[in-house]
Length: 147
Image (cartoon, rainbow, N blue to C red; front, top):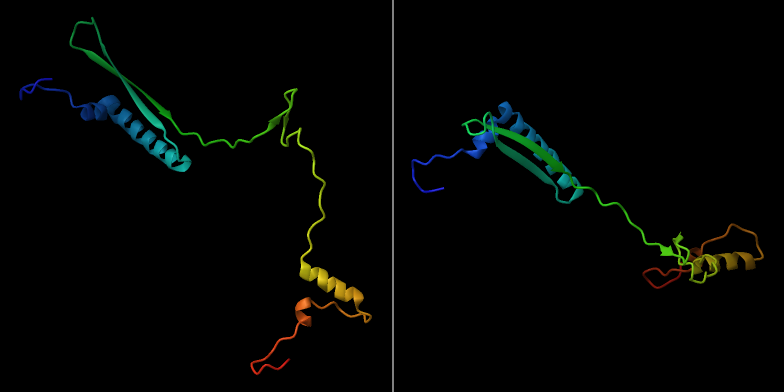
């Protein structure tokens, strides 16, 4: 393209807006909107591709030119969750390493305060409702006396 003011060119945006009576532009706008929503939702890139084919029409040497379009959209796909497995020598997958020795299961840990409360209740000769350890503790008032 030269710099002559008389040189004319085809404005692409005007041609795109007029293609198919505006249907191509409307379709591209709609697909761009859908792609943008998908990109925001998934957090990955997507693409919208416009392929514009320009070919001679009629005898091939005339002034008639045909324009055709093809629009492709590649939406981003969310990542599928993965996992790590251990493969045995025969190719079987295992969630746990089959070569690792198994540890025995330990009993659940009981909090110390609960064990003390249970021991006090068991040692008491009088049958009464068990009291929590905190009820056995004495507190002092502001003057230093016991309550």
